[in-house]
Image 1 (cartoon, helix red, strand yellow):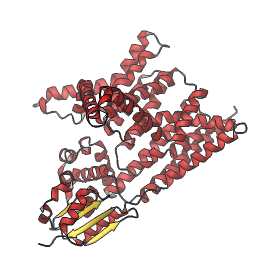
Image 2 (image 1 turned 90 degrees about the vertical axis):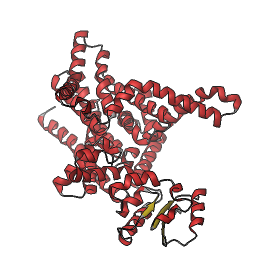
Image 3 (image 1 turned 120 degrees about the vertical axis):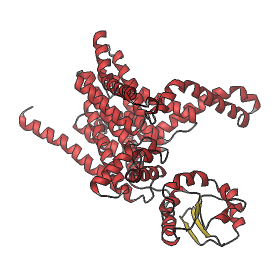
Image 4 (image 1 turned 90 degrees about the horizontal axis):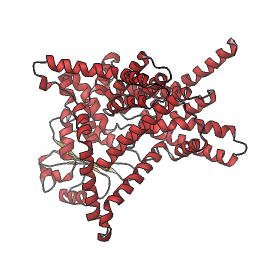
Length: 509
């Protein structure tokens, strides 16, 4: 390739990344501007970020559950201090930058795995219009940082297995530590991914020992520092470990906890769901239920069209991974599946957000499937047309939310903020209404836990408040009984088209 052709090729490759950045910024702005209500977890991060200046990091990290792993809150606080933006704007700015890092890392991973220029353009489309990934762009959550550094770590690990160098091993470890600072699950990858070095049949056993050691060197340095800090501390038993204690408990007692929770769930299934004749098969039924639930959750997290394209790529063997690619992708998939499946089995629940890290790895096959379909578009007109239509619908679903508006929550909170005296007492069963009312301060987290159930104000307990702001999503018996007990007309009602409401009462004393 002559120098002019090489320059054109580099310019074309750079243009993929530049346009991906522009589109990512547009999507972050578009989705944030069209969602006026922050996610409930965001309340914790914003309040704790603001509290760092007032009460210090230790107090801020004890403010609410999510802040116990405080790195994300510290970053929001730092961005706010550096830019003089509000904490909300700072969180959006930080999340937008982290989303850009995820997008660029995904495209670069496709390049490392053998993608051509056209495949890179397709990779940009795939990640930019990944439905579940985009559905949380406007969420104020630490997952944005976890995904970004998780993908960056994958890049360094592929480079390391292709050409082992100490610097690259340290960069992988540092990236994974950064991911762990956002979500504790990153520590599991830091602990277990290096074992992939033992499966590298291209290396001698001496080389595998060296690779395993180099990949763990950064972690060993961190552990050594913690040990030294503990030894030199006057009160070594009080050295804070944050959520690392949770990780330790999960590693030590995880199987016991899993067995206990599984047995409890199987017993409940046998007693309350299954026919007595089928009760003896409760464990088998629960295993099948969890398996189908997990598979369905993963497929819907990918989206049906992306899942189809992944299977298509597998069936046609379109992504010919070298040994380095296999070691990295398969180890990440294996650890992700174990972590998320155990979480589902222990909690009988899993959020879509927890599966995005796994989905991002599977999505690496999608650009190669699309590239193959473009090559065969003439003989496969019907298939290519159907895929194109589904991809378009998927992209439209990313840009536009077709659910019912939650603006009524913001309107109710703002009304309380503007019309209710600061000394007045307010009861609300909704944390977001509390937040936008600006009447609760840092007490919002205790109040939200105590007041989520309307039973807290049943049987005349509502008389102890000056105002009630009740969020009513459906005609529950408890809500109907309470409204009858109030026996008065609401002061204001805020609602959406579906009929979800925040009903505000002023209590006469």
